[in-house]
Image (cartoon, rainbow, N blue to C red; front, side, top):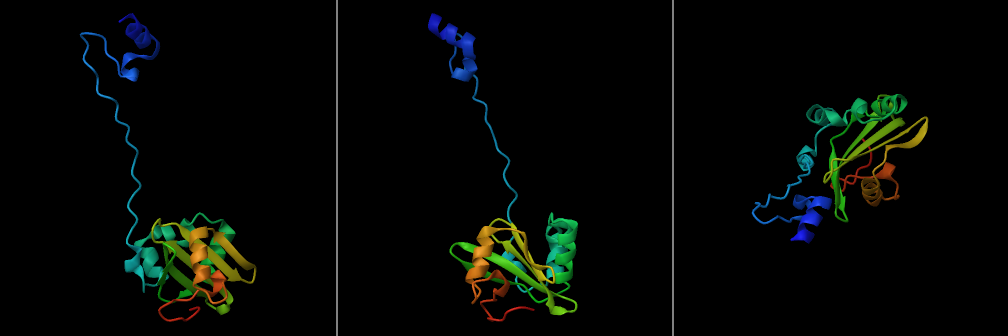
Length: 167
């Protein structure tokens, strides 16, 4: 009894799960962790334009992607004209892919946004007069894009359903 009382004094009986005779045991504290919000059904967005997608999911708009001002401008310009989105999957990963071109044409600028369908994380990239840049890196999606490209480069990723590259 003396040992229990001493232990309770040093650490607190409730922390040790001990009770003194005549005391009621308190219920252990329940620790809950906030759950992540569910990931949307991105598969249902296949075939939509980038503009339609951004209307439904504004967090993927150029100014919401946490890019710098210059990168946002480059990506916006490179996504001025887009073709319908497509999906690709392999190795346990899947992505919804949006490709775009500058108003002046794909030779002037190309943009790509690929959304990891399991996590919602985005891979954002541009190829333009300033060079080829990965503006928001997502290694898992980048590997998937490289695997769906005949050249092994994300810039050449192709819609597996049509095997057509670029908008």
